[in-house]
Image (tube, rainbow, N blue to C red):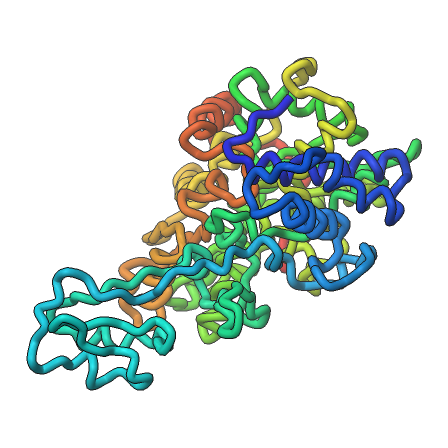
Length: 497
């Protein structure tokens, strides 16, 4: 039914699907949950690890995450823990961590065996010695401080970073000294999910809301709506249009779906007006607020700049509030490529707006559990947002939307945007902004490279899905933000955080 780019994606899907099936059948007892790893790995020959016992142990931890439980390998039981009470979303699966036996620093052939041997002089652990006239690092003594690399005049010492650690934008991912396993320092983590994508062993994953969502969908009187991120276009392959996606959602039990892009149009207008007001008050710059990873990053690393963040809610929240204004008994589920959206939904000032957040991976598992193949679904009309609202999923899309709104509304303001995506560019832009050298007055920051289409929980990589996404965006009948008739209805909605 679904194609997976990697075996890690396939295994995660199988676990999520099997847990969803048990939720549908109301069989979420300890015995059935513990049987899932044996169902997925039925033989006695290991495929990826040292033995099937380890492979099943890792799958057992994935089952816990799918249930909303801590992946605690030492815990004998699978116990459901309410994930809405937990701020942390991303966790290490210790059993899956390969402990990357990588020596961080190594002496290369560029070493000249110089007389000054500055590398030896600066080493606090006496790990640097001379062998055959050249520098050599005793890895048993090395503390990986990096002083030798900084001291070498020939740059003859290479640095190899663990992929999970390299990917972390805040330095929250560290390595435990005693066993070299990865650990997450939660006080520094922004739950962006970059490390999930980076780890080639699948040792990092996110807690899931799949069980309570499936339980809601299984009710005869369910009143549950989905707010769907525009990046979903193309995620199920070239044969699945957004019209078929809408039908697939209804077939699994959703009352209907709403484009988050429609909320993006409303956010564009509100944020555009906010920008004008701030510039009139003499503010130096403003940032967007639609990317929770970016917002969390500013809060953790640039707390003095938090007042520069727009007070406008994200399209997810705007659309959810719109739905609940029409149906106060509605349950609202956001579906997107983003792990950080799960943390956004738990923010104190936004609690209750979105009931649960699912990723594209999780909605695919739900469809599979309900035996709904989106490729075989019927076409349904979907045209609620402008081309610019849908464009929010691309890096620079929000900026393009605000530019369109300013132009078509004949607003006189000096709008000088700085578009950045990915941790490196964001750090650079925020650092320049802090010291007054930004070179603009608006920062659009997207924590994922290229924007939401490059999120950690996508089914297909951007190179395969982007063309289909652009096609869907271009199909919008509304070619300007202000052409969206629903903007009048959004005027009654509180779009402030």
